[in-house]
Length: 290
Length: 323
Image (cartoon, rainbow over all chains, first blue to last red):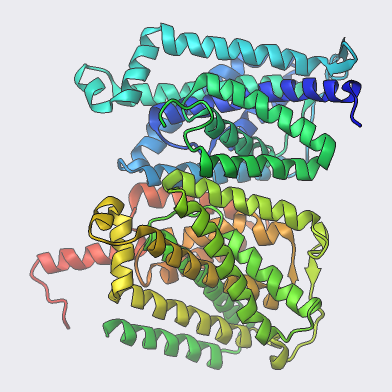
């Protein structure tokens, strides 16, 4: 009853949305893998980055793709400071404190945005917002296609940083064995803050890829963050390739689920997958530790 | 027994204020403070004594609220009789969520996540289910009569909330003294060690979740009776969940008076905020979020913990605490 001509565009659409989900999830999974905390402020931080892109466009006329390096740097600095000055100090070495502090930070950020920008939904207009590209029978919005490529590029850079650089070695060492890393002369606090900063920097990139085709309001982050949690759990906490594959999977499920069930129930589908994964496969579909 | 004395003093003082005061402002403040205390107490039963941090307590609140409203609107049931139904429904939801989460060994961040996710699922379902009125919400017909659980003045609601909070205090005092409470705190402090001593953590945590859900459901039913209105955002949205956990954490988790003190302090703070900034959207939550961060950073044991450390310091200096 559903022909290829309907399913194929839906599939492509899901893959491009999934790429952005993956980008959000990559930062989350890095933070989890290293700090072993769930960053509840992730969605709110994405929302702030999106307002950053929006302001650069509406006040200074910057193209969103041009603002990408600026937003990546700004979000990195923001994340580094947040971890070093607030989260680390408030944790007193207890995980549940971090949980509460990141929740508190999320509440503050979301409501500061509400105070500053009001609840109105805003979007930006570019020459290419409505451009489309034909792939077979499907018409894909150009910004979504760019986001797809961009997400893969960011994932590659992230992988290189973590696997191929001195910083990455330090981060991996701290992730595996904090005490041991400390004894080897690694600055643990610095490695934590760098990981948190890089995690938020991914959001800077995600915001720049999202905004040409999406909108921003103070609540926009919470939608993404539960999806990102789902992906991170699905892909295995701390696994990069898991986050990428999980992102695409969820994007496709949402898109095809929406086709069959309507949009709001398609969302329920995501939550149900999330709950099922939490219950039955908390190590994720591809997690190595059983 | 010392607990019974302080609880009696609390009840007498609050009841006296409620009965003697004729100021609408005072009574309204008291009503909202008691309502916030009830939510904080509910969260404290599971989060404070059980160590299971729920980020989705609105799940139980909303279940209670919708059952309270629907029982009256569709079932024609008297609200006094609907109240135990609402509490029971929330307890059942607590049992179901607890059974799922604890059977599969979810704790810490995972438990927080799954409660949050369930609250969201319920919110979306309430938006689209046929019997919840969708996004428009449900409105109770206005018929003010004590027999209809709708009071002319906030005084009636204050007394109802006081009864519920007192019940919460009694249950909490029982947790501090009873074998069950000791087991629950043992599971919180070290689940493996507790299990090695023959405690069944699953059953203990499940009972705590049911109790917690029941009290949160009572708060939801209370909300419906006060405002005669409920919608999916109020019922299952994050704000309710945050208010519940914030009151317990600010006041001091795992203590008898912590949720009462915390909710009172937060209610005073939000009143102050409203006087200073008017009705700016979001300002209240900005302050709540900042308070959460600051409390965890500087006062991880909450207001009650502060009193406790003053007392130990006093004792250490050779003072007499038995007076």
